[in-house]
Amino acid sequence: MGLLLEFEGKEVFKEVGIPILPGIVARNMNEAKNAADKLGYPVVVKGQLTHGGRGKAGLIRVVTNAQELQEVTPTILAGKIKDMQVQN
Image (cartoon, rainbow, N blue to C red; front, side, top):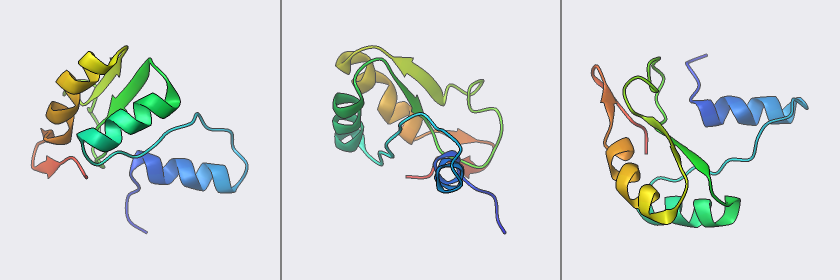
């Protein structure tokens, strides 16, 4: 078995009855905006990759409104840690 991305691990938890916070995978800015509108602000935008240090690398950000979302999402989607690119 390979490494799981966070959203994949949450699905496994959900299947076995472990409570998880709601989340929506977004692969581009439009999907991120739709997800944030559905979930309601504030939201946490996280780059998905199988490497530690996402927070230190700026790939996890709390945003409180649509303008902040527009500012941080492109950077997170383009993010890398070492040679590993954010999955989108």
